[in-house]
Length: 209
Image (tube, rainbow, N blue to C red):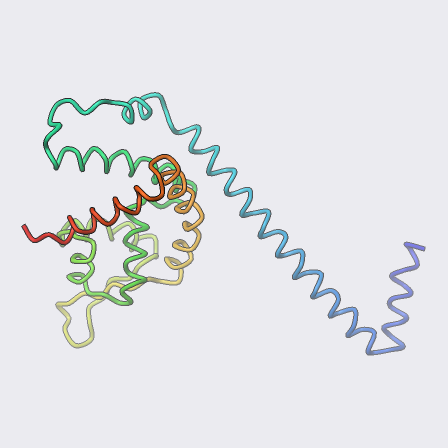
C-alpha cells in the first residue's frame, strides 16, 4: 500500500488538475509547519548553548572578582563605577560571545538603529564617547560589513553612520543572548533594583560637570 501511494497520487493528479493544486498547497503548508518547528528548535538549542557557554567561561577568578570586597578607594565614585562596569560587562560579554558581538558593539548597533542615520558627532554624543573612541569602536563593525560610514551629500566633512542589512540581522540575532544576560542580572540584583539603577545611571550620564 505504501509503495502504491505515490503512483496513485500521480494518476489522480494527472486525471484531475485540481488534485495537483491540492497536493501542492498541502506540501506548502507542511513545509511551513516544519520550518516553524525547526526555528523553534534552533532557538531552544541556542539558549542551551549560551547557558553552557556561560557556565564554562565563568572561572574561579571571575567569581572571586565578584566577591572581592571594596576596600581601597571605597569612597571614590569613579572606582566604584568602573568596578561595577567591569563586572557587568563580563556578564553580558560572556552571554553574548556565541553571536560574536560584545555588549559595547551591540549598544552601538542598537543606537544607530534607534537614531536612523546619525552623524559621527550625534552618535558620539548619544553614546557619551569621544570621536576617537567612537572611530575605534566602529572600525571592526565597518570591517565586518555591519555598518557603513560615508560622507554626507551636502557636506563631505560630515560622516553619516548607517546600519547595513547584515548589521540589522546580527543585532536581531544577538537579542536572545542579550535578553538572557539581562534576565541573569535582574535575577541576581533584583528587577526593581535594576530599574532604579538605570534611572540613577541615566541621571549621572546627563550631568554636565
